[in-house]
Length: 591
Image (cartoon, rainbow, N blue to C red; front, side, top):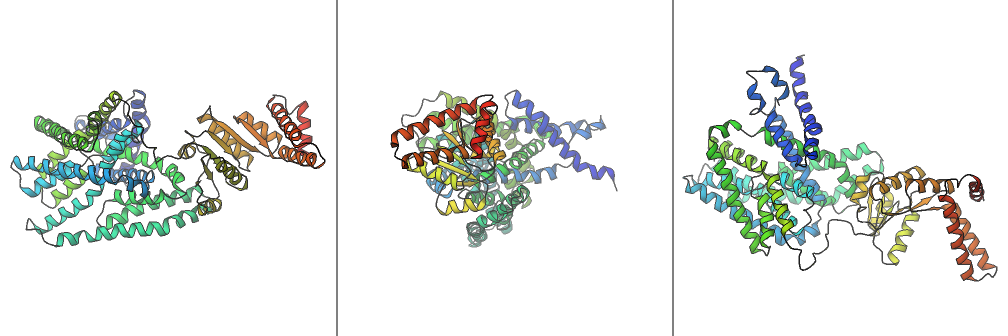
């Protein structure tokens, strides 16, 4: 076996992991976007970076990526996973409410940018077909870079953030028609367009309809069956199957893999598995997106920049100015403020990852000359590397904007602020019912898929997942919750949930169900605001009933029960509560 050949692929993986584990944390410490760190690392590790020194220092080859094509192919999954996660944060209903922005502002941006950029290309002497292909490629922005930057800046749920996402979403929807049109143009060799163009879209339309129908019928039963196996590994495998499988089905029908994954995310957003899937997929999305940004830097042909610096910089600057002006004008026409329009236009003015896909196909079909296409790709890549800086400028502009005169509508994506119930058996269901009777909003989390299914049939807000994980609790709304109620009958699991929640929210009211006095004391030590021992409460309820039955006035009984409950709570909170006084508690437990 060739040892060198067998280790070459592993070397590239090690270099990527070193970038993720060493370089990116340094950028975070310096308060610089990690996206920029991945891009710069890609430039250094790529064939146009340190590899140029290989002829003078052969050992440099150990610190450069040997197979950039393989990296780029795998990196495309980063965009697929990103679109899937975005779909999970939406729903069909919310998408319907956003239709004016998606099909108004988004469609206008793609259409106007395409026409303007193609017109400028024709003004420099290009034919209609290559000019249109270049205009379509440069009209699209980078979802893979813009959305993570907005999420990192916590601006993705603002008015401008939703408008930005709407434009990016329509751009992703437009990729499939653009690619199909290019394929038809290439096949016709420049002849007049025929009705075949419309027929070419039929597989894509049928693919979308089939994907939606399949998802509606089979996605929930599939995940429910896997959840009953109670295996984290199997659930993870099922999640990966949904993402990659939906992407492949979409690709086979002429759509992009990212669009298929987005549709799968939309379908899962309305199910009880939404938050657990988010937590499961998040690490894969983060790593693959990092790989994507690394591949962007690897593809930056610095030799072309060095050979034609003024032309490359002029095209990059012209793209930012022209596209930014178009987006600014359209945003103003849709009612955005001047500063809001600038905030939207800045990050979206750059090129996007789908420019590589469109121009690569256009060059392969002979629609765009290869030299011109490579030149445009390098300029677009330079603008993509500037997105974190442009988004930072947009954030500065946003801080200068005055607060809105009218409060915005509540964000649909998050769970309503209220009470989070962990454990939705008989006790949790009764707690939820009492909260609802008093008008308090609540969300439940449960690990038993049968209980979750039963709650969903009754139209109750219950989600499947492991509440011992902080990421899952945050997805369920712990960050905004007014209180947490832990009703789990597993003592160790309840203690873990209380400890995790207290670490996240030191100010949160946490009420936990305890098995006995000793368990209640441990829950207090873990950070519970109040722990309710089952044995003690049973004793107090029995006492209340018998006192009323023998004729003691109800008011006096209720007052004494409350007084005794407070005394018992104080006893449990003492350091020596299970010492001298603790014997009394244990005696009570045995009764």
